[in-house]
Amino acid sequence: DRKFTVEQLRSKYKSSEPITAITAYDYPSAKQVDVAGIDIALVGDSAAMVVHGHDTTLPITLDDMITHARSVKRAVRRAMIVGDLPFGTYEESPTRAVCSALRMIKDGGADAVKLEGAIEPRLSAIRSIKAAGIPVMGHIGLTPQSINALGGFKPQGRNADGALNLVENAMRLEEAGCFAVVVECVPEVVTLAIRGAIDIPIIGIGAGRHADGQILVYHDILGLTVHPHHAKVSPRFCKQYAQLGDDAIVALETFKHEVVSNVFPGAQFCPYVMGGDELNNFV
Ligand code: KIV
Ligand code: NA
Image 1 (cartoon, rainbow, N blue to C red):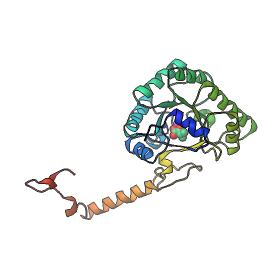
Image 2 (image 1 turned 120 degrees about the vertical axis):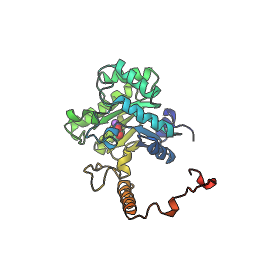
Image 3 (image 1 turned 135 degrees about the vertical axis):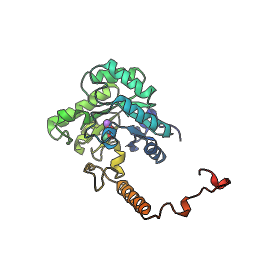
Image 4 (image 1 turned 180 degrees about the vertical axis):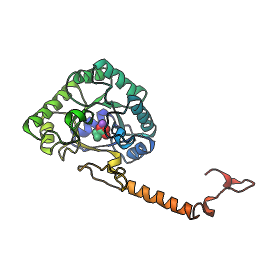
């Protein structure tokens, strides 16, 4: 498959074809996302939570994110790789933001970067990153890096002022040069209003049916975050298309049972014999 570019994203948007995006953090997840034909593999800073076990996205570093991006890059043939700039790597100055974005592209192998928020100096940062030749995706609504200011993981834009503010933020991001914007956790009427106000694609998450595309977190969609011994649950807006966490536990329990009861490995999984022939190969 040919690489999915910003240009192809634009033409999908123009012809009203829904855009698909899923997060990916490592080689296997990225391989699955790419083979499934998903348009965008987002190396999300949600890795802090779903991979590293933190309660928020705040602790993950740019080095961590670059390691994730490099693993994703090795797996992907077609999908556009968008790398999140983590908390504390772009907010205070456009210069800092450009340095972080350049690292995400040069060291991480991402095709584009994403950052959260639509106030200065972030808008200038978006302009500067774009001027450096790097496409930028915006992110408004529930912006998890601002969790302490927002007061928790909760829906945004549920009153007139909040909704208007989101529409204005989306317009600012378009004006600053974003090629797309993630809108997270808002009533779908707000998404509709934003859609009417901008001419770049909206990638929605918990943002209803009127977005131009949908993104979900890999571990949420596959049911990897929900299992009996784990308190973390997927958000209400997430449809789980599999319960891989449960499947993994069953497989591991079965392995344990078979080892303690001397069923595994058994003759079938003892392939190597003295003397050596082709059956003595590793695979
Ligand atoms: O980090 C992430 O997973 C994200 C998506 C939810 C948009 O930013
Ligand atoms: Na993110």
